[in-house]
Length: 311
Length: 294
Image (tube, rainbow over all chains, first blue to last red; front, top):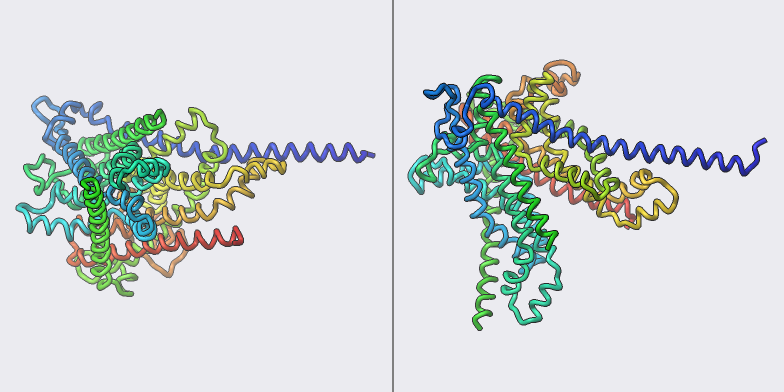
């Protein structure tokens, strides 16, 4: 006969054991899910990088040509026998549309964010916020379609040229990243403590003085992060830009003439080339460059974040 | 007086900016909907596209978009729940967690075309699944996972700490606390996040061009055996989605009524996103009411 005490103890022990086991199992299962993410991000880097460097390792292209050359005909070779992989026009195009879009968009987006938080919070919360959230979700091909059917004809009729080009790409990207920068800026401005505003107003400052001397100054790292996120999105956008930029691999003389970006040439070319050939390998180098640029954007955001923590 | 004038001027400028943005958005959405609605009818929604004659529809593309969305959610929901629970409940504050967070952030900010090309290398070529729904759904999952993990993590972190302490004080394990107490409370936020993410998946095109492909075979909508090649459910057939379709007909330029078809398809996409956004708020609220009994 087992007495009551012993039985109780045994049950408790058994309970504890299964409990420890469930606990361990739970932790292991969730960790497995996290490992999938790590595995994914490393395999993306390895797969894209190993394809991206073949043009240099196998086809003997020169790195300097890639960054500074202006002739993009990967299947042809120059007098030294190296393939013509001058990606400067695309690099130039990508940076132009990204920087121009950020320059046009940031004042508008931050202005809208100030309006939503400082000037008219009720209207901002009830009307603007849902609209901005809706805009974030609108697919990029829809923006591309708007570009083709509204922006390009407008530019063609107003200025000389075909209408396709950096100007059209900039306008489409500006509209695309407006909701991204606005909603992140709203978060940044909201995180400024109210006590700062109250102190400033109590000192006799007007609302505008409070906004630009206290609120925007305090929120600056957050606002910068918002702009960089917007730029990252603009730099990596493929289809909307491809539809309006004209896809000509030259550095254009004007904003209204066909140009190209890394993403546009990559998207178009992949379907027309065969895996393993020189012109296909060259495209993978563009993909690798896009991947590395998105690391750079994250790196900048991290640095800004660390500075903010130190303050 | 000068600074008062500046204050008024600044306020006027902010109203002006807000006004411009609202007008712009209203114009763009109005343009898409009004141009599109004249095209949309039952025939447009159900019939297959025609390449060189006008009058085609978007039936298979619409079906493919929804089918891909469902498969993507089946893959991403369990994975993101697991990873989100780990990040919110188990991850300690150390370097490894920092590294995990950076990894997720990097994945979330990858250009979708890069995700698509990775899918093209790994799923289409290396694994040999070809341009197929399966390859497409996996690429979409790579694109969707980091966003969903963030949603789950944020919803779980928003649950007050005393709920966890109460669970542990009752002598139940951390895993059971998460499963029985924390997760149900975070559910409204998670569901809202999943629906919003669905909207993004539904309209994604760049990740699909080279994974799910740019063509759709003749589908037989009476054949629901997933193994037969003409079945809409067959996961190993190529599947052009609505968003990819808009891009393709605009860049190929053979279809005579490409502009009208794009307008109609864009309107459908915008309506779908509207629907996803509104239902996300609505369902989130209902689940919240049910669970909190208030």
